[in-house]
Length: 202
Image (tube, rainbow, N blue to C red):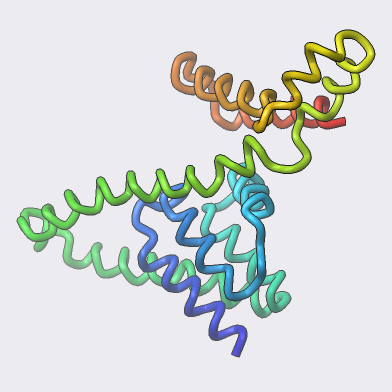
């Protein structure tokens, strides 16, 4: 029964996940709640790992959640469920694309889906921002805090006492600048920021 429930839940994710990637983060988060009581911070970690491992976010997350909920069988059920809708839809579209390419109804539906996709990405941001910038295990309480206690504890203490992780905010800003302004590879930026986090988190 758990296998069927996993399959159906992630089938819905695959079927309704317009926009893919971050656009369906909130949909995935809501879908996994019946199977495990996962905090937003844990989910944010899963999303981060999924972003730097091969394969789509939805597939990686389905594989992980399925395994945690019901072992290898659950992993297979969830993964198959999330990829099946895309396979069926693309197979259908390939056969009918010429017929519906100039359809006003199809074009109108796409025009409605585009802003909805932006809304889904906004919902994903709302789900992930808090654990990423104000969750437990802040980078500001690692190496920098120890150095601050030895040198200028008052100044550093006020920074690390903020309701958010100032170091994580700086990493966020630096990532946006490096990718949007300087056109650096997202993969390279992720590796650099991960290394910085590993050092500062000590």
